[in-house]
Each structure stands twice: as C-alpha cells, then as structure tokens.
Image 1: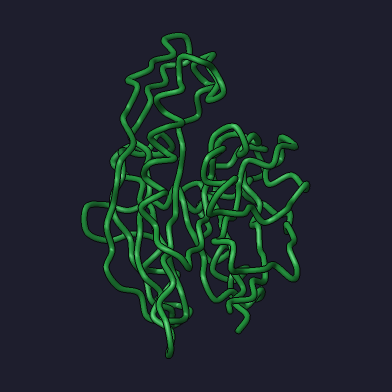
Image 2 (image 1 turned 120 degrees about the vertical axis):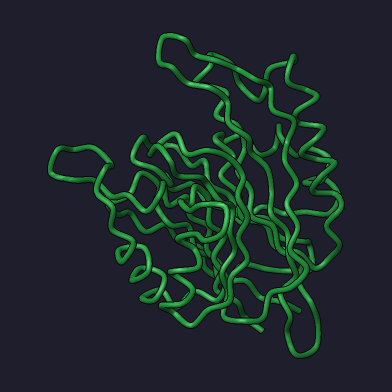
Length: 244
C-alpha cells in the first residue's frame, strides 16, 4: 500500500504579500496545495486557532479529511491567536495525545522573542488491516537565541526528543519542523536503530535550508520525494511511502 505523506509548517496560514512580508492570510492557498497533491496524510505545524478550533479543522472540512489538533503555545505571528500542532488524513485518526518539550525559557531581548512551547502531537491512522502511529512535531528555534541544538549544553534537549519519539511503536511516520538540518545529531540513537529519514536535499524554506523532515520506521520505503516551492515561509515536503 502506498501513502502520500506531507509535512508543512503553514506559518499561521500566511503567504507573502505585495510588501514582501508573510502577512497575507490565505488558507485557501494551503488547502488547494494539499488537494492538488492528493496527500493522504499531512503533518502541520504553526497552525493558527484558539482553545477549541484551528485552521487544520477548516482545511480538513474543505477536503473531507479527518483531523486531530491541539493547542501548543501562543502565536508569535498574530496577537490573540494560538498555535496548534495538527495532523489531517483521508483515513480515520484516533488516540490523540500531546507531549510538550521542556521549555528552556530563552529570551532575545533585542528582538523581543521568547521561547514558546514546542512538542509533538501523536495519533494512530486506522487502516483496514493495521494501524500506523503518527507524530507531528516542532522543535525550538535555538538559533534565534544564539544557540544551536547541536551545542553540548543542549544535550538534555536532544535526549528528551529521542526519548519521546522512542515511545512510538512500529509502524510509524513522523513529520517535524526541526528548525535544523542536522537530524543525525538530534536523533542519533533512533536513526541508528529504529527510524530512517526520507532523503531530501532540497530547501524547505526560502532561506535555503531544509529544516523540515519526514521519518519512518525501517519497515517502510519512499518511492518518490519532492519539495514544492511556493508563497509561504515554508515549502511543502511530500513523500510517497510504501507501507508493508
């Protein structure tokens, strides 16, 4: 069985406006992209919403998909909005749970940035003959605070991520905005034992970095992977995965 899987930080449903900034709300852009690509599963990060509803639910309703979504933090993009982590899929989703990472409570006083909560949302995809464990995640942007996830002082953070994801049983698929290209340094134990990363060397954001990643258990294979550049501050990463 083949599943078309995508991960996408939709940045509050904002696209680049005539001003050159990502400040034009256009949720239809994201909905149409997912529809055009005929994705089976989409891991979403930086989804705007409130304590009850989110943009992921709006997208899911438009496409007749299923949706799980939970609030993770306040939005730094728009006051009075909150960020959700979400997963939408054509198939049934069940057993949703959210795990937050330990917040390092960092602050960039010059730019007025604070480290908002990050973490993972988990659920199960229900197929006719099996269930697949799914996770959508977002890691801290340490570079904003003149730090890097690879730093020795952040070894505890890497170990925590590794421990959280090790709770996922096979088969599993994970989509995550790592805010880093160095997945091998962040997940050395899992990538040497139970997970594989879907290979991608294309940039997933306009800055030229590939910070968005898809991982699977080792019993799966990717037959095609691509990045589609577009109008948002992250590009959609899509992979067709063969499920045994």
